[in-house]
Length: 398
Image (cartoon, rainbow, N blue to C red; front, side, top):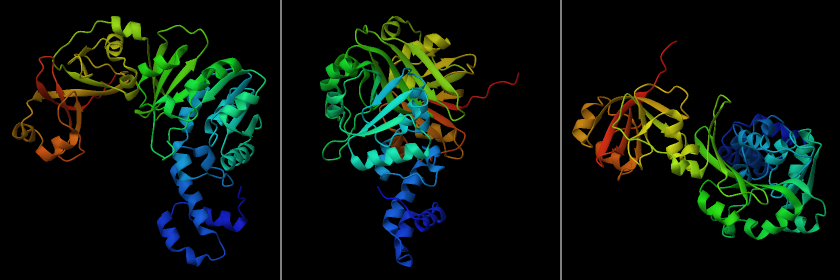
């Protein structure tokens, strides 16, 4: 692994906010420095500023390629994952850059970071020492080889299988990822009391539950309303119908949580209504988890349509886990009528259960993005297309 000289560190510090392409064009000004390599470090740090502030804060931390930084967990999601587990020994079988291992080490007495890429393993080990994580052992090995040689028993085995094919194409099915968790299940259960599996939010939850079996809990995790990952806690003998948690990590550090199970969701009855004074759009974790009826029941809302997943009420629900809007009226999908209510020809557009995309609507109507107006294009309880004119809801002063 490369160790940077004081001159190289100084170059990265001075140019940390510069455009990497511009730095490469000016490389001839620094013939004594490996500018291409240093620029890669700068580029990786720039990508990690919001995602990995702890790592960026240390000038001596070494970053892998920008792609590896993009694929790693954020500090926010890693910290949440760590809050879910306990025990004396956790083995991270797909260690990567080590963000998850680092946060697990704050909750677990001993962590083993397993990474098959030798350079990445060395980088992670070096950074752990810099960050003061002395209870992490870095092992350069594949998950399969480690399990075969591991004679102990862990409290938790953690896996975040690589979601890239041999051709570097994105994949999400369990059997297409590396390692193949489905093939490893017997060995995993033999070497641990529990397995925590992270998957892409693109993977269908019902399919994953069917393939994995023995799932005790499921967490769908969104960061600032962008769905990032789904976690499955596997335990031998776990019964069907695991508890599901829709988690949205908010910018202010708070957490929106909705809990339910599939049986409860299917048995919950929901009523329907035309848009009332307020309109609600659940956060992405709720939508991904499938809590369409549960969210209506838990917050006393009515749906606009079985498949629209938009909700309404007469009184504002201030703690709704998602976006809340004050309805300004409804109308037909008619260009002339819509533009008559938008003198600035500007609005934020959302489509739910509607035959056209946002791009199609903007092209047909000429409405630009932005402004204080929000338009929802959807289908109502009478099976008719509907445009709902809204503004963000503001809770009344106490």
